[in-house]
Image (cartoon, rainbow, N blue to C red):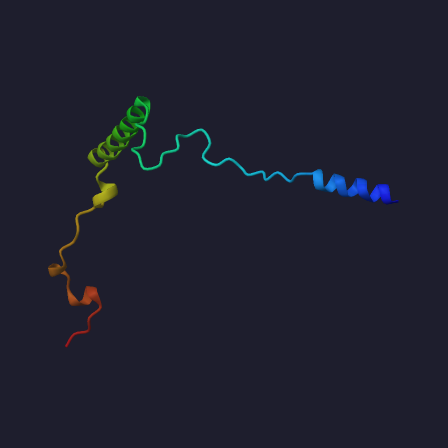
Length: 91
């Protein structure tokens, strides 16, 4: 019984607990008090292409379908409205 207790205590003291932490931001460059590295050329080209396509889409639809933004019909002039149309009782 005593040898078993000693063996158990020795096993517990020899067992090391390793802290396992997840690696965060793995695969990217870590920078401290320095300029960040410049992005790759293809990222700049992709951003410029996406921006150009987006603005082309917006402007071409404003040109061909302005009614979606400005309305389909001309706006009525409020000065021409009569009191009866507005629901104002006569004096």
